[in-house]
Length: 304
Image 1 (spheres, one colour):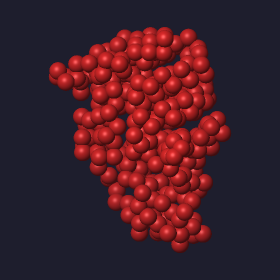
Image 2: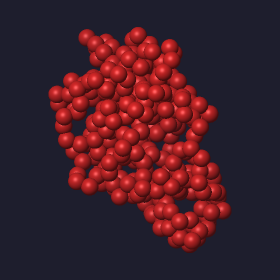
Image 3: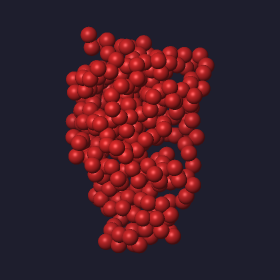
Image 4: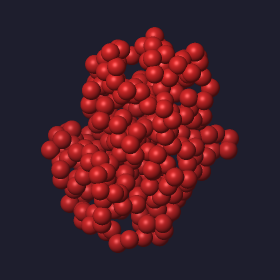
């Protein structure tokens, strides 16, 4: 099941915190927006939102956003929710929190998979722009952008049973693939379709959001987006664009990326089957991965 909150966050609390620390914003309208795995987001007026950790483990993650997003956002060709105000722990709420821009758009998860080909190359471009060497002191995330062998003891037990046979092969191929030999690069860490905003008619990429899993490491973690978001046609556009922008020798890139997609999607399906916000894209991604046309090798060879 989706992890439970260890603190109650409601509109009254958000109003109280604003009055304490940002009184010029305190009388703007408040509306519930997102109750995620790690954070609650409340819309504040027309242009802002308040982001608060709902679990203790998310406190450090929100701190990473506050520290690093101002430096990372200028690298990217799409909108990023850089905090415009910060909140400090108080008697009312003993955790930091942020006021961020409200970015208009709909979750990519709510757009038909076939429509996403229109912005597949733009997503690859945005991730390639992010994937530059990270500075000393960049955060380390033990469950993202690490060698896949480090995650095998957590992921492999989820993939038992005949119904997991095909994706189990993909996971094993990723673990066995050549590791990333370059320097640690910035990685979003959780680029699933709930964390990408798009605009429709025409379909286009609008923003990358929720950088709580931001870390430095292997970029193939983010390239799982090729399966999490896209069908076979979209993956061709995505992989072609990314390889053109980041052509460094990396023979295991797409095998590792597909394995990361297995890890992310299976976590939702097995551990949080009641998570209606994410179950759809997770099941779709596993179907893409299990399909004969969406193996790691096919994602590349289909371009020939």
